Image (cartoon, rainbow, N blue to C red):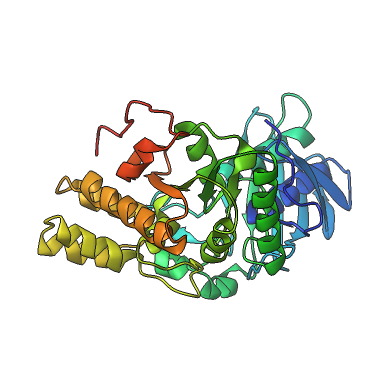
Length: 379
């Protein structure tokens, strides 16, 4: 399904996954003697985007090509802006595309991430993007071995969250859509307000706010809401809520993955990592409230990601109890911010779409689908 860019006036950036995929496609073409300064690649949301190729060369005709793409983050604040992504492609007779990580791509050393410990940090969606982009450039019955490297990766990663997550020696190849929206810019905040205004103008009485694109999918799964009534808020949820409070909506849903939403439960209304972080302290406190052992509380405080705490909470059967409390506190915090003007519900799901917790008020919302509660049985 194709997705329309939400604001054509904003300069959108491209993810590290898109940069890597573009370099790989240009290198695959160069291996066949085709040198180009631009390539078009597919993205997971159905859009095709064009990227500039800084350099491409044929190393060995009909065998090996190399290309360089410089990442453009658009208006999104991103330390990888301007970083070079180099792809080296070797054509092979077997009909498959194999992707390997070279210099500057991080090594995953801890669990709780999309890539297993011991593997290089090329996430599943960008990995698929690279393979699809290369496949478009190959003749039939021809495959390729692709090596992606980021020469500045080892230095750039010092300014990212990778070291804290246990990703060493380089950056991660990330992205779920291939496109970066400037979610923290003032212009994007104006865009979010405009989207809220439009939802009201279209007659919507229910509205949903979610931190990211995955939350849109989760919201559609559990609530009867059109996409125009679902707003991706990025980090500045407090300012967005203040705008919502000036409108005439009757119900508000806050829905998405736990990473950002746990901060909201602690009363943090700007969830950018540079502003505040209370995720693990909040989860540890709520786990203690629900009877967690001292050992479990220590483990939560030392966790790398919020997703990884789910497995920790499973050890004592506290996933549902803790995230139920998180959801209740989110609903309470948001309702207080809105001064009780709207009926508020909150729902948190895992990255696999399984329900972790929801506020009791959620069940009373008109937009609630009333589904059988779909929890991961392993919880």
